[in-house]
Amino acid sequence: MERYREMLRRRGEAGLLRTPPLIDGRDGRYILSGSRRLLNFSANDYLGLGVSAALRQKVAGNFQKYGTSASASRLVSGNFTAIARAEEAYARHFGYEAALFFPSGYQANIGLLATLFGKGDLLMFDKRLHASSIKGMTLSGASFQGYNHNDLDHLRRRLEGAKAAPAAVLAESLYSMDGDFLALAGFGKLKQEHGFFSIIDEAHAFGALGEGGRGIARPVADVAVGTFGKALGLFGAFVLMPSVLKEFLFNFSSPFIYSTTLPEAHAASALDILEMVAAADKERARLEDISRLMKETLAAEGLTVRGDAHIIAWEIGEERRAVRMAQELLARDIFVFAARYPTVPPGRAMLRLGLTALHRPEDVQGFIAAVRDIRRREAGPDV
Amino acid sequence: MNIFDEIKQIIGEILDLEAQAITPESYLIRELGAESIDLLELAAALQVAFRIEVNEADLFLQGARASLLPAEAPFLTRARLAEIAADLAGGPVIKVKDLVSYVDWKLNKP
Image 1 (cartoon, rainbow over the protein chains, first blue to last red):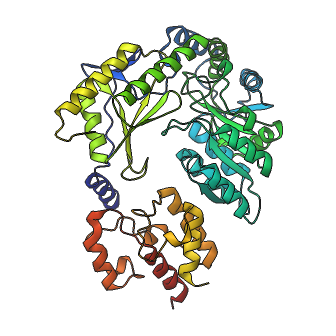
Image 2 (image 1 turned 90 degrees about the vertical axis):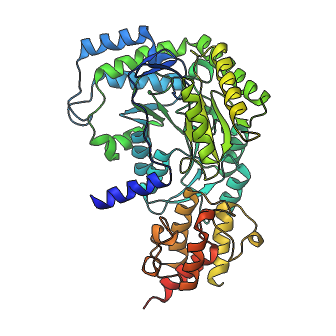
């Protein structure tokens, strides 16, 4: 036990011990914590489906109808028709040959990358790839070469400098921390020139972006990863891919094979959600508008902000400053996540804002008013 | 190619830097901007390039503190350890020359 205590102590000394507040419930764009009602800018519920009463009723009905558990792995007695049908519908909607559901996005990325690749393969990846993809990549045993975030010139140099062609290039369509899009045109051009296979994580894009919520990377993706836990308002994840890869994962992906499959009620709910997401043009438009308003308003305050869509990164720099800003906002009933080392590089701490279609212009005004107030009270000339 | 030149080339490719920007005295993280994912790749690349077994935590002095003892980093000289101990407040201390020392130590370990 001593070594664990010691490691925790060191974490604490570095000011990096994580102690998230207890959340007692949700109410639309608010979270309830103790007696407080906090305006939440730290969720991934981009369309508001995670708190939708209509969806809650449908999902409750599905659990009522199908029961609580699959009680088996997909490969034993858990290969339910309801799941196979939902997977077909997802493949069709997103424009791929096949889909496979996983219990979580983390597991999907591990189950995908660690299974498809191995010793002797080379993977190239954007350095801001999600931790689950990095873990899957390292578990695979493949060698790997990173390129600086969204720097396609660096990717090109790595492609040209490699002894052999990479087995795949890994990227995200909307980066979860930086909030920027994959440079689609340039990536597509490189893909055409070098003929590489691409795996694109669309976790933050599916549902929220593109026509019918289909994301933005289909033209450049051979395989895409999506999650139910963000814009889709449920839990679990899915991988979209050529049929042969689905069959391969079905037979060789250990995290998939040895997990109890998500239950039929999940699959039935996934089908309900697909209908709701396809019809959510109004919510997507609202999300786009409120995100633009937030970004422009922050920029007008002279703050350094990045973000091409509903994830906005407000760069603060110094870790303690970012944490203090988040604490000050919290004292004003606004919940924002301060991303710092090792989630982002040292000295590059940021506040990460996740917008949802439920946010209203007055939320943005309230946020800005709080920021102005905090900056006025700060001793320093600028935040 | 000597150890430093080879390491310089590897770092240059990973970080997309011109070789002349990298000297033995360059701070890997503070100056050259290496992130944790770069360290992961760098450790793996050194392993392949020099056919040595690389322990990432040892190599990058992860958890290095003011009390750093020679036994914790046997590839560094006492003088360098003292220098590091005096430099901890400035942020991540590892320099390119420390990587050279590590590889050299691994290659020549009895």
